[in-house]
Amino acid sequence: MDTQSLRLFVLACETLNISAAGRTLGMAPAVASTRIAKLEQLVGAELLHRSTRKVSVSLEGQDFLPYAREMIAQEETALAAMGAGRAQIKGTLRFAAPSTFAQLYIAPILPALMDLYPDLTLDLHLSDAQFDLIEGSYDLALRNSVLEDSTLTARKLADDQRVICASPHYLERYGTPISPADLDQHRLIGFRNMEAKVLTTSNGSTALFDPKSGTQTLVVNDGATQRRVTREGAGISVNSAWLVHSDLADGSLIRLLPDYEFVNKPSLWLIYPKSNVVSAKVRVFIDYLIDHVGRSKNWKMSS
Image 1 (cartoon, rainbow, N blue to C red):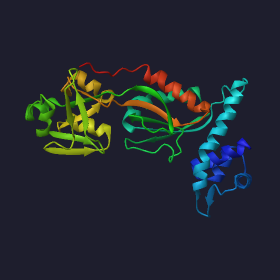
Image 2: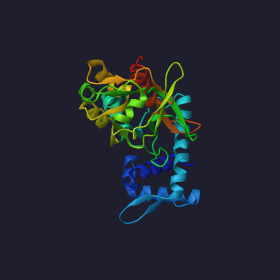
Image 3: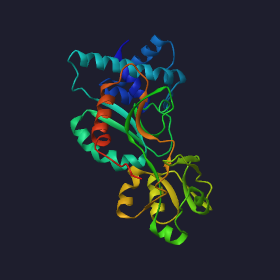
Image 4: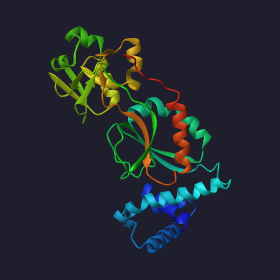
């Protein structure tokens, strides 16, 4: 199967524009359309729906897309194994990540990456909301949760310790909880879709933290906003240590119930669809993030 046509198909899926995808690969629009048509004839299905106004990916195209990516990756890996293409890190890498984390730790290191790989285009999707890696056709994603999806492969970037905290101003007004049961009498800030979580101590005692159990609940869907309103005294919230470690260090926030830890401990995972081959561009980006974020940052809180 012609990998150049596969590259064209993948680019067309990403841009929803066959002509633009063709131009990226040095093809005239008519040539690009012909190549897509021949590919569809070869696989026996319409991969892209075309109209005079737009292009969309068909259901068959969505099913075929991960296989097309893998065949391209296999070619790149084979060339690298033979000593060719080692510096050919190019093309578009679609990367999804939590917005708050990306702004703090990924955005600052991207200029150096761009200098290293000038032919690599990063297409970033940044949102603290949950997303579907496969349906979004992402090459790679960062997820700060417990990994449960067996259709994905993952490499751990870092631990994601969660801590309960509030501002000094809030604690002066409403008092400091000394046990999880006291939280029911406090204003709680909850992250959207956050479920009740089990807390435990070193001696085996357990308790339930439910962000909906407080006297007044504020619900947000953005980590930076949650940190800001907590600093301003809106209530008590659960935050990642990587987000609030500097606030805890300078006293802007106070860690509460330090003897308790969450039983279900999430991590920061770099995830990608299962495949026999990882493309060169994905491999170098994973290594870059691990070197410049995973190995260089330490946000762990001591009890």
